[in-house]
Image (cartoon, rainbow, N blue to C red):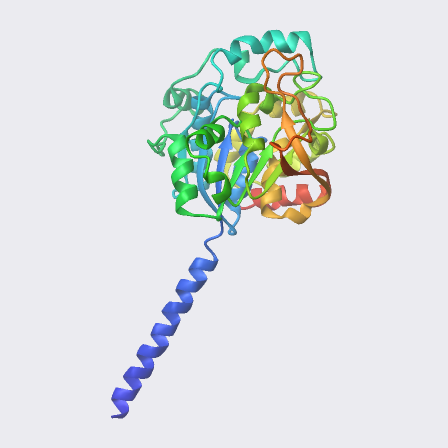
Length: 361
């Protein structure tokens, strides 16, 4: 009899332990995040990705690459390399849109920038060089070896729709490149807006001038129609990390090398050295650079990073005939949504967050 009771107690304890383990596992699953990115080698988009991957509070479901700073296939190569280094075996890497929504959009970009040059108008992103279509060849050329990860063969738009619908109210979308694939998903299934937890963008210049032109920021300028579709959609919550705050947060060479030296992985250090800013800081120690997309990722990790913000309606000029095509601005139209615009962040805390994340690699 005593043996029987002892066995029952043992089963009860084990059953309770399993239940608690499952609860803990569910609790620790983390915030579900999809990144939409014009990925680069371990700077800006790359660091944003690595910060989220390093967090135990984030379930990084997918990285979808689109054309902007880099070509979509090129960005996929960079994303996969960083995913391999991070050991991100559960994250899907997906090739997104190679071209903006409007046919021929890129053919007019250069003339638009020439007619209204901004402070960074020398940089036209992927438009500055021939299109890259083969991610695997680019990977081998860049890193001198074959990839060990492969992209997930699923249409980016369908992945966004299915993931949001299968996890209602749980998915955060981090859009740190042109909004093309998110806009396509909304066109195909507009109901996902109300099912998405939040969208955090890097894009636009609401109260300040643009960087690529005097009036427009690069991500929104690449695909103004897509940006307008997204900002006008009734998401539960939208956060726009625009140039209004990004222009205030610049990285200098000391901060860059401090982050670089905190990395343990030689392979990741090699990826850092392949970035444009490695040469920039080496050749000019007084140089500074924006770190736009990382602010958006840091916000997802800790929204208290933002010390000041505004909540206003925002729209985008999506008229190709307009002289301010791609401009984002405060709006009053009912079609526009209330959007949170961070204007100040805790800068020391921000750079410490980057360093702490990079120390995990």
